[in-house]
Every structure is written in structure tokens, then in C-alpha cells.
Image 1 (cartoon, rainbow, N blue to C red):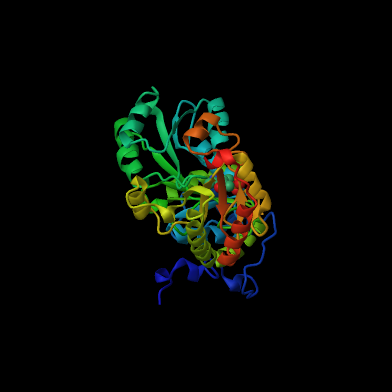
Image 2: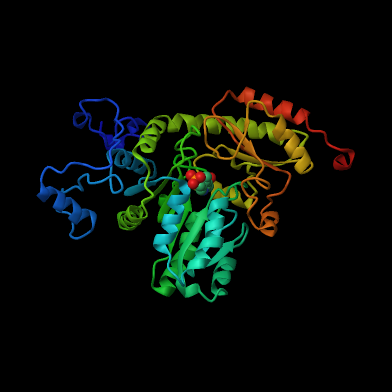
Length: 426
Ligand SMILES: *Cc1c(COP(=O)(O)O)cnc(C)c1O
């Protein structure tokens, strides 16, 4: 059987690691070293020529190990393994999801450029786009759920910067509402339209943290770059902060070069922990999705719940249903719901949880719950939040790998502590 035909989960224990280079160790050791010994001065010279792009690689020539800001075996093996899930040419791993995001935005945008981005987006991304990019003269335009491609095109044209459109940044499903953006139609109808008109390629970058790398593969849908907070499902144990970017060779050389000079690469030990996480990625995520479907169905029928935001409950008549079917291979394990009432009821519920931890972040083995309007999204423009359905009623759940009956029992007993006042019932 050919390795190329195997599924990524079968290769997560071995791909990219050669035991004979590490005393036969079955597991990749931690290469906790800052620098690497060259065999000869000539070899060191050749490595630097490649690393700094002073000449093209000879056929079969590989970049040798130089210095852990530039390359390190733990980083490289992790990158090779991450490439398998998304069928990407190359990957760059970072010390956080935010460093992956900010490096991509800094590399592909320059003063005068226009960035179009979907709303809602992760709070840190929203802050970087709205508070940092304007300082370096990058124009930004946020698009809202429900806007048609035609409406988005005319909004772009109305900015007076349409001819400088450089990138469309999407987060789909969006945190915390699970709203979807159609990646294929964004590529076909918007990015291609302006690429042709401006005679300059408009890139699409997708933050795939909510789905990845199992349930959605944006490169296959026309995106140019995928970004992950590896802190979430990839790490999966709430014990590391990390990020990753994937894409084709040409774009990834640029991302890796900026990473070398910003120095925001992952550390060898964090990369080693992520290698360990990747071995169980598929079974963790499968189990989390299975649990989430059961939890969402329970919530949907609970008398104290007003509305559930979960892809696995989308109705066939919902305009997002078709996007979901063509874009995602599963519904994921992130659920938001509106509790009947407001902040008081939501907080009563959250304070009563026993098994589910009251904490931000997501994608880990343990279930987590939080209140987006007063926690993760508290920094987002209040008017925007209202338009996006992020209100005091909303609770976000990240479903873990526990027994689903225990998760549901915990939710059930927490609802029992919620006292709905008479006014609320009417
Ligand atoms: C957490 C998160 C980020 C930021 O990642 P860090 O690892 O915390 O820097 C970006 N995007 C999404 C969707 C996230 O959930």
C-alpha cells in the first residue's frame, strides 16, 4: 500500500520523522537547541544561500538546519503533518493564532491597500483589523451576514479603494454565531472579479479554526491561505498557545520569510506537544462532533432555550443549508444558544455548571462555556454585536470528549438553577 493513498490520521504517528536520525527513537525527541552544527563551512554557506533566497535550490537540494528561528526538526515535522489534512504545499507554525493572523495581514497588505473581512470575527482579529491596520494606512471594509455578492461588490466599489483591494479575509463558520460565508462564491464572484478588473490577484484567507483541520478544507474551495489557532482543536488539551498558516509554495515562502524576521515561530517544545496532539486529532474531533449533535438536540427542546445556533440543526430551507452541505463535511462541536431572559439568566446558568468549565477558548477535550457578549466579544462595536445576534442571552459551548449523558445532565441541572421572572415568561 502506498503512503500517498493513506488517510492523514494513519500518518500522524510517523510522517516526516526518520528514527535512524535520532538513535532509533520511535518518537520524535524534542530538539531543544537554538543552533545546529554545520559539517563544513561550505555547507553553512550553501544553507544560507537557500535560506536567504540568494539562489534557487538545486534539484533534490534541501534546506539544512541552521538556527531554530529559521528551522528546527520539531517545527518541520509538525508542518509536514499539518499539510496532509488540508492537502497544502507548505505550512508555517507560529507561537499563537494571533501571530499567524497578524503575520499574514502584514505580509500581504501595504499602506493604501483595501482589506475586506467578514463579520463577526475573532475578537483579537477584529481588534488588529480595526485598531492596528488603519495606523499603517490600510483601508478596511467589514461585510455582514446576509449581504449578497452584488451588495458586497457595490460596498467595495463605494469605498473608493476598490482598485487597491488586496485581500478578502473570511472566518467561516463565524465565532460565536456559526454564520457561514460561501468560500467558492466569494472566490468566483468577488475575488476573481476584482483580480481581473485590477489586473492584480486578490487573495482569500480563511480562518479555519472552528472546523479544522477535519470538517472543512478551504484550499479545496478556492481559498489561497488557511489560518489556524492551533490552541484550539489542533492542540486540543487547553495546554498550549500556537498557530499555523497553510497555502501554496509561492505564498508560504513569503509567510515564512516574514516569520523569520518577526521571530514569532513556535518553540520546539510547543511543536513537540502539538505532534502528540495530532496523533489523536481525528478521534477527538469525531467524538466531540458526535457529542455536540446530541447536546444541540437536547438544547433545542429545552423550554428555557429560545434559539440554538448549530450547523447540525440547520433547516433545509435555511439559505445557509446549501453552503453548509457543499462546504463542510461535519457540523463541528461549537454550539451557541440564546437562553430565555438576558444576562441574569445566562449568568445563573453559567455559575451553576459543574462539569463544563466556565472559560473562554474552545476545541479542547473538556467542555467549556462562556458568555460572548460580556467576554470574548466585549470589545466588538456594540451596534455590530446587536446586528450579529451577539446579545446578553447568548451562551457559547465548546463540547468536549466527556460522556454525552454527563454533559447533558450538567446542562439540565444548570437550567434548574435559572429563575425566570414572571415578566420574562410573558
Ligand atoms: C482563538 C482564536 C484565534 C486566536 O488564536 P490564539 O491562539 O489565541 O492567538 C483566532 N481565531 C479564532 C477563530 C480563534 O478561536
